Length: 268
Image (cartoon, rainbow, N blue to C red):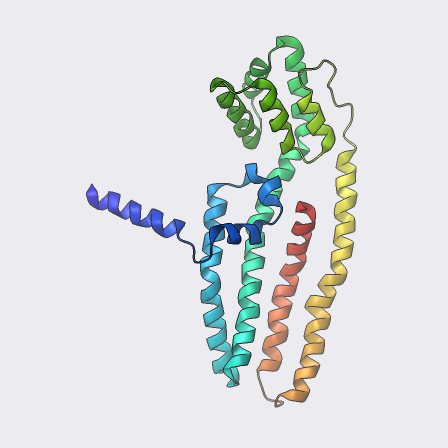
């Protein structure tokens, strides 16, 4: 029994270990969504962020050594390539975590139209905010994030927190101002949302964001490796493998950078 407890304690310490300062690491990977989407950031997300941060120095060391052994050039160039690769690893794989958080928040926002109208109907029939939430939670098919969102409110109400304060703070989770106002005025009659034009606006904004990022994608993943290869062909011997290594690195990370920028833009 003691052995199992010791093993679990050691595993917990290992999973919580971080080479980089946690606040700096979380802020670097999560960016603005650390505040705007904090409700949707789970402990697993933080654990994955720490894992990516801990693997970054390993990627730096391995890449530097491999590049140096392959090219037989000076160590400074190997360090530069290793630094670029490790930074790319940190941001690209960190973005995978970030994109999942954004996806959860977006899904939450997309169903707000139905949830808030259902809550308004419940308020008309029960005239009680807690009972309206309980009635909403009793229905099948409600999203898990909404369950957690409302259950946390019920918990805070049971602890004696002000109902008006909970409603005001709870509305800030919505990205759309109309949804935020609708929730904060939920105790007022006729707070129904008649339509959801913001959905079309989000689609248009996403299309425009994709168009803008395609230009950056072409520059990073296509033009930059081409120009870099031409420059290196004049500097390095014609049989040097470094001419092929640089374009390969930029082609891989350039493809993922498009997705990274897409998620950064949609999250901000």
